[in-house]
Length: 179
Image (cartoon, rainbow, N blue to C red; front, top):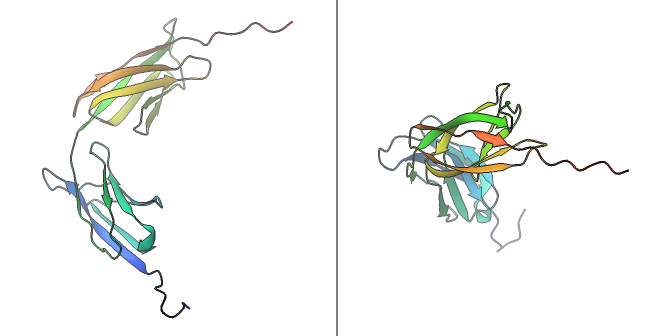
């Protein structure tokens, strides 16, 4: 029960559609996030999303992101119930390769990531990895494994294509045991 004359927070519904700016095709799996709460929802196969029963006074912006698209962050006006958003496609490609040590042996269980993208792969028994849905353009790849020096490399990921990036990791220097 609220105090008379004092506006009470209201529960709100926000729904909409996320689609490609160039073709208007729906984007399935886009992440729609209410800020600053970080409460999120993913779009369905038709690009639709819906938030129910949130306090709109606590929301200042909405972030919409999807692999291969430019992320958008839009201001939010309390009471708004529909927000349809077009995202610009920048493309995505595949990066694959092998991680080996200085002697050319596979490094099993190494991680290869795309800096700033949240994409990660782990090498298999042959030292092979594959990263899919990597946004096109110049990307920094990072290979890591315990006992080895971390290695960063830059790759130009072609839009809709693939590129090979092989890593050769050097072992971390060991220190002699104290006597």
